[in-house]
Length: 378
Image (cartoon, rainbow, N blue to C red; front, side, top):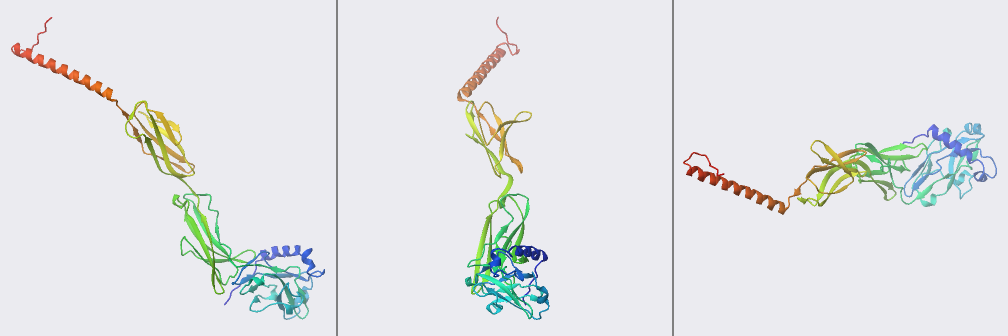
């Protein structure tokens, strides 16, 4: 059993005002210079898919002779293409292919067009007749566009300015020309996302699926793909949309390095380099551990300086979402070979002199009979 929904009062009011606008000018010329007795209200822009069906929400309002319509008994209605005489109901359609599904007595002319073909892309005029009332909505034709391929589904919201830890509901939606035969939506997010078909303010329908995501740095650059598969005569037609997530996040994997590595000579130049994975790009700050406190020494990714002493260095990467500190790197000055040779020579001489003094002291002790007193000649 097919289920149809009535138009909302807001949609009816808005479209009535739009329709009044067309009572004059070019649209009125279709009426042969006469003031139309009533006008129909349909969406101003609607797209049909060839091979599918199209449900067109429709209502109508009278400008005069409304009492004749209400008291005229059984009503007959049909859509007449512009290629025919629009003032003769026999020229119109109300059958299995173009079927007015609602109650004309209640001013509801919602219509289903079945097995849409490109040849059906034209203007249609609503004709109503009963025993007392005969009129055509000549100033407000129905017109829709027929496409061979479906429109791409929409992925919302805008996924270009997101932040980590933010919770966002991603929606993939597709226009639904046939609410009783909606498109099948699939994407590379959770596969069991609930499909819903909802009525729009203009009386048309949209099918959608949703998924809530709590964002992290791993979502940055992730591509979301959503496909809409429409059932048509003889098979299916598919359209796909892809969007890329852009997620900002605090610094990750912050590290510091030194070049050249290992021992360096006093007076030589070294380069400290700080790196971090983050978005947006971070601000880098360099620090040195002194004896009693940490000293800020530079700002920037790279810090070059001439070595004068040993030291401990580290960097901090920061952006508007947070900061992270690198591990400490040690800078050690290489002791020169000349200095080592000189030091070893001095140490050797000191040890030699010490040995000579101890030897002489021992010899004197023995010659003095073991008194342990060393006599020194003056």
